[in-house]
Image 1 (cartoon, one colour):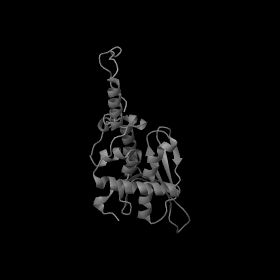
Image 2 (cartoon, rainbow, N blue to C red):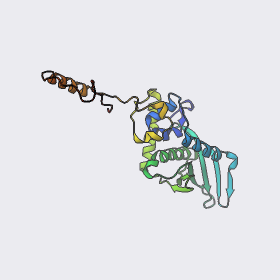
Image 3 (cartoon, rainbow, N blue to C red):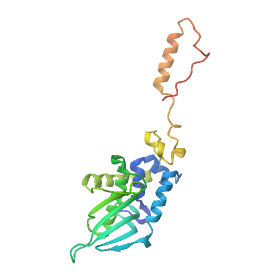
Image 4 (cartoon, rainbow, N blue to C red):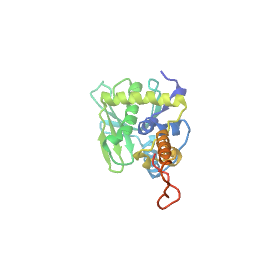
Length: 236
């Protein structure tokens, strides 16, 4: 069990699954940078998290910005929307958790969002001492609600992510940058600089060039084409 001082934001799970280095930059080095995607997402959550916008509809009570925590998984945060649906008299309500996102559904690429959502579910189940019946992601741009199955695979991946997150923060170490295609849209790209840390030469290449140089020293010298000096290969 974790203490209050050890609790980490539920949103950190999204960062971790997307990129452990990003999670470390935000939650260890305390660095942050905005781009249009993060700014739009922040505006969406600012409206959704207003607890004054909770409402009652026939058969369902809707809570917004509900505060969550789990001492088992070491998480704390807020749920965008929690729906409490009426059931038979004397029985607890049927609970559904909804997380809002700014863009459109992207299938398997939405795994970080699903893990974050499942983290909210684990917190709520611990607080209510009852299973959460359902969960969904609502994508603002497409105005579409996508149901997320709370199966054993997602729950296991979320529990693993919680453990990985706490291990990362306790280590105090930021993972080495490795450039990937998804880096292009990351708001922390100017701070992370994954291409700047990419090595331009390896020991194997150095030895290969040295052997080639020794072998060519016995041959008649010839001027390199177009230049008096060969250019270095910029690829890693």
